[in-house]
Image 1: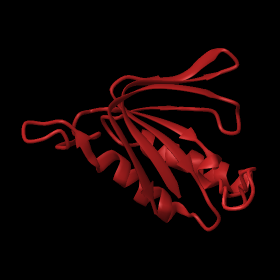
Image 2: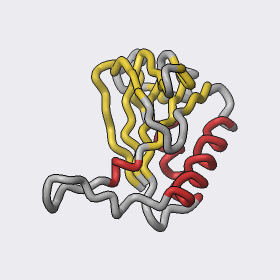
Image 3: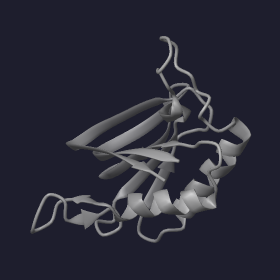
Image 4: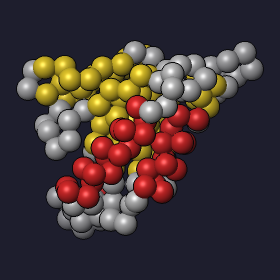
Length: 146
């Protein structure tokens, strides 16, 4: 499992011209799922996202976690994180989990995130063509891999 996270001042997802998810200050997490991922990877990656210290505090710019600042989390499924351009020019998505498996783990990830007290969670739409807008704050962009 991979999550490309960006600290944002705002973020949103639009499908068919309608905004389906939006957040203010927090993290946009683009979530990729691969073969062999389980609930163990869900727990690991989610824990890293909500507890990584990327928000400013008195001591440094990287002092507080999403949970500590009562930030918001926008979770967007993104199988292309497992795309490879090692051969040719067209991406190979063979490392991405099949849609049925990925959707199950994506929904579990969202459900577990929503259960965390003090964090507002918004989502994209699994397997939809989405427009994701965000204002990266910093900029801060990190890759989390299980």
